[in-house]
Length: 323
Length: 171
Length: 103
Image (cartoon, rainbow over all chains, first blue to last red; front, side, top):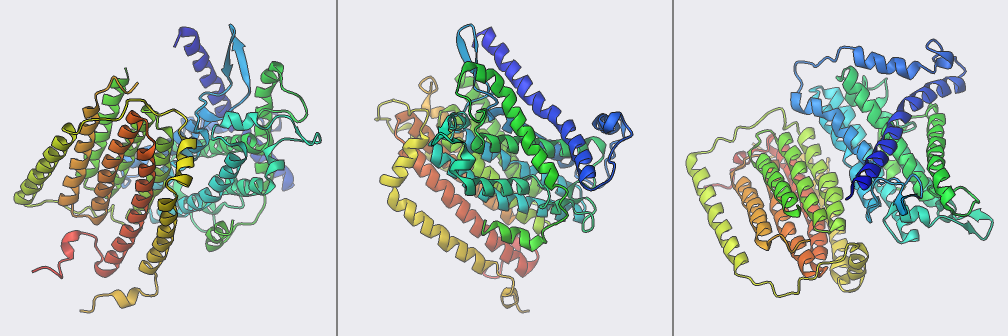
């Protein structure tokens, strides 16, 4: 690879990955302010106008606060737990297509860090590795409640991987490829000149299944069992101090961002705006469009995070089976 | 360059396999098993069998080892670490048996000529594999699905909670 | 791509993995570790199958690997069910404790 190709690859890597990382503080703010507005209370309003600097204050707090390590934990796995969740959450970003292509010196490069021809399989397998951070973190804490929280969370994630995978396989059947870029390419144009040829119109049931499983995969309400305050203290991250706890949270929010990115790619046309035809100009706009769509989904998540209903434990896995 | 990658990943896999065999705590063994599966998957992807590489991570690392870790954590086997001090005779005999077996395997391999033409398989082999699964290998595929059904029934029969009392050993 | 690398390198690696798995299977006392070493042996076989399949350009080896992975998953599940029952019997999974048929 020539030097130019290295530079382009590194810049793609930095831009796409850092965007997803920087979306995390925005999500924190939107969640707290949005939940507050829906629940008719002020929300964070002390730090900056409308509480906009609240994530910055949170980050400073996590950086400066003492990171206690209890005496009886298993040191190696305790320290590795948060990173075993963060690394798969970061790796998924590599196959999400953010836009079409851009041309530098006559050669066109895809707006995607890596276009693997089994991209969807890669995504499903890497996201099933996120379980280990939870399991090993909960076990290494040497605390029965952490372990119980970890097992509950892990069993929830595993149960809902099956409908997630089946919905994704539905998309594979329609587009005939595992590559995420080609799935997004297959969604351009319109359907009977009325609807855009998006996945959600070709497969509404698949979208519904995927939507519900995505909530369960990322532990958002109403699948919030691992974090129920009344039953377990804080779930599997009870014993974790400031920075490791922040890493778990960051990994959870990054998972949310990437799954909504996947949802956009499979069901909402990837980077295609509803009725515009394809052009290279669209490729430039398309990058931003995908991010807008990702943010659109995150807003969906936050609206529903204020729903008060939790599933009962047995009902959750029982719901996975018919799903 | 590819040879360097091969050497690196194969040494990594063997080191992780050593970790599986030698670790006293079964949780550490499971973790080393995950690492060795990653090494193997890297080798598969390096050879161009991307489908199998991803299936290896999805099924082996993402499901089988999760089963192991669940059982270890449920039965709380990680906190009570059993001592595997054997008599040196057992270790000696096992090592000699393994050594003979490996010699046998190596002699078999190095005497088998490779007759097929060296045309490597195409990169996008998922389509080819799925076509073959449904045409030439349909019979094993269907038998496998019936087998998995029998398996689910067997596992349920094995781990039913209400029959536990009947299986206890009476003193 | 693969022609540069001699074929017996993979054979050595797979034999090493198989030997380690076999050694662990014979030596270890914890039933779960024994099952894990069994998985190592299966993976050594998979390695050879995939490598030969990619080298000769026939997809049959890869299909065999798909079946091997599926059957390995099945057998692990049943094995762990048996281990759970052993634990119910004797409160331990050390294989030395299950000696009632010995002698």
